[in-house]
Image (spheres, rainbow, N blue to C red):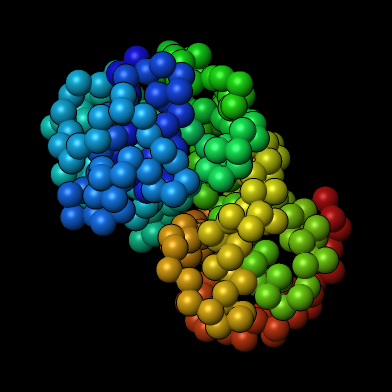
Length: 315
């Protein structure tokens, strides 16, 4: 299979390494202006992943691909699609990032169809996994979901291996919403770590999953998706892992340290507030994260407000 990977960051470079490991012909696309991509071109390593000479590194995109895997920030997806619309139109896409469009709350597969047409074949690759762990040979389970059954089957069969066991997703709405929302829960977990309240992570995981499940149901998805690999199954990698950008971002909010890596949960928190307004579903934990990030509310008092909410049944 001919695989084009768009985006040469940490995850994109891993995707190229992984597809090459499975025997596919791989081209990794990066921007000439990116110092990280230029370092990868010159040394063929970014400190985490070392690419074989079989992987082609270039800055131009063409139609010579059976599938294009996109690994860019969720907020730059629409720009990338606009820039390469003629080239990408009709090529099966696998979205390998977790987020929602900030200003609209739209799922990323929706953004694809708005830019490339309703018939555009698109899938999502979601679930737990950190590059650092994979490169140590630690396996994990992930999920591929799509409304295009043929595309979903093709990707699962072509990408399954001893390092990643793939499951077939059956709810694109739930998969995308759950995967995006877990990054917001990750920021909340980091705040708890920074406040030395890590013991509350169990409650965070339980209640966070419940509110995300309610949102998925309101949007027309299956609320059970929140309990699968896209959301609850990704919590260990997001809520506890030292490699989690979102958890670390939340921790740095408390400690006052600068954090310059991409934390998708920041933009997703705003997107979820848009969906809260559209659906009327209460998202207290996500709302608390939004308040801390965008309204600069005090973290201790914001946490206290969650405990002061009206008493109710757990289920």
